[in-house]
Length: 326
Image (cartoon, rainbow, N blue to C red; front, side, top):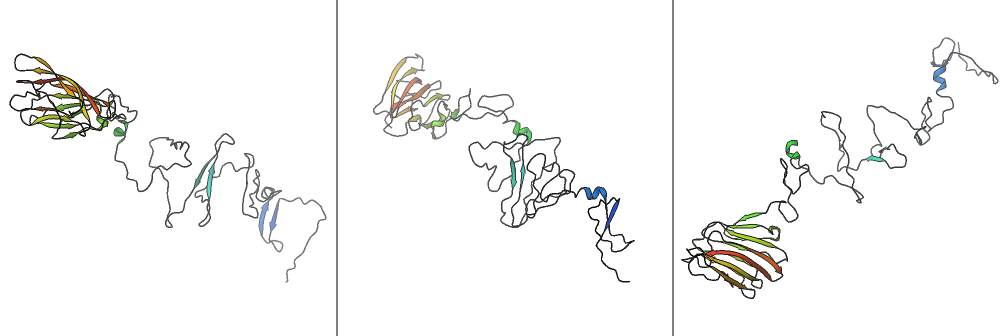
């Protein structure tokens, strides 16, 4: 028997029923059964809008829009979430509690190849919050560039620098000041065959302890630089010398020469400031120009061409000036 399609008009009458079978073509055929509660979620739905307890229907642009707290989707739980598709950029916006105070946007840049960049966490012992620092006035903030090398420092080692300053503190590292050394501690420089001092060494205690002689060279003059020299082992060959960095920078001042033989006689020796460029304590046969342990003197830069000296130089035999022109 042929089945004919029929249209039934109810002329505005209300139909009261429990369920509707849609798609059935004859009595007894199942079709798709819609209950009353299922039909209600379709009633008054606006495509593209989000309405509580109503079906979600995308608009002609395939969008769903919720612009206020009342119309936004409150919670959405999915196993996987893609923002965008290959060739079409996507983003995820996260808003804070306070209105009109910005947002956090997650976006992806193009990789060199069709690869995936994954952000994941290591297993955490407890709840942890990671805070992105403020970039300040910069428009962007790069945490790291290029190829990074994983640190091998342990948490115990990192704790040594946490809160560290230039002031020595128990169980903490000491951070050098702008002058290159720790607060409350002078740098100590022991002599080598030839030591060239730098401005960063200003304030250093320079120690002569090589009995076969040594040389300290002062840095380019800068007002206020200063260095202290001490002899802890008497020179027996060659000489212990401190010299300026160039022949046009001179030493001016005087030292107290102390005879260490038996009399401990004191004699002043002057540096003229016009030709003397070095303090030379030669052994010779008697150490008459100094180099005996206990010697201690200081050189302070007073201008762009002069260092001022003061202190005590211990000698033996007949006293002779320790100041030389080379």
